[in-house]
Length: 457
Image: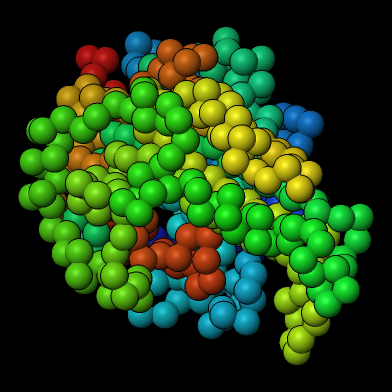
């Protein structure tokens, strides 16, 4: 491994310039006007994969954006890694909050600022560089590897499950590696062994065929804004507990061992609140902040729209009101079951004086593995070699629905091998990636392939 690590250490500046080129492509999957850019980004990934020595590289079309595939299968008898990442990124609005253009990567104080820097281009790219180092120095990898990169993760991965089902033979492997997660804190490398699931809805209420004058019609009809506010207020009680009947029936409870381990993590709730700019933290009574964000289900209102929102005053009763809402789920909760409970509850509590439409948008199951499995432990050793510190084992509040898909369809364990930081503004203005963590991640990824190869020996 020494020659591989030396190769990586002498190319920091080169990697930075190459990463900037990747980040410059505005592959925003949510916006149709960027469809050509998103495909261009897929082609960029394919070109880079060919350049670093991967074989059978191609774009595989789906009803949406293409999947980029490539492999190297020359390590006879060694395990096979299936690496998953995504090349699409979130929209950049509000643009005026960015300190530098979101697709002109800028380095400030040891961090690179650009949309996609942390989520997920920077973390995909560190694997490209680790593969390249092995191939350039040794002419081979210590393991077999298959790579799939999708272009729709940020819009719910609508076509990925079908792609995996249709290509089960091609995607056979021993373990999935995903670098789309983070460290617990700066200087505290981590291995994540659990993710929350998700269900996402749009609620539309209609009270009349058009907006109405609030003087002429106020008191005669229900205001959809008021009805929507009342409906949303009935989703939680004052202790933060979700009111949907049956919502908690299947929740996998925290073990005492987990609770004890998490109490030992370097986490300060007051500092956390200050960093968020929150006057006070709030959540389900009886659980710590880490427990609530990693291992308890939630209900959140993600967006509201209704009535007049411009400058000045307009006395109007809106015809319609809309909310986008999501629920984060934990192991053993089934998204379809929760969705049905939610739909039934909304229809029960909505007033009869409005028309109600509930649209299920997307979702995915929670995922959890045991942190003593050999692949997770191999990842822990690789992280320690890359960062010089033994990692902590954590869960993550976010969702990567494909992790559960890999388990259910391909029967594969997954390793979440991320280097992002909690303050790196993924999905927000001024997204960034710590360049020290990026470089450590390249080294750790190179070690990861060697550590996983050892499992097969």
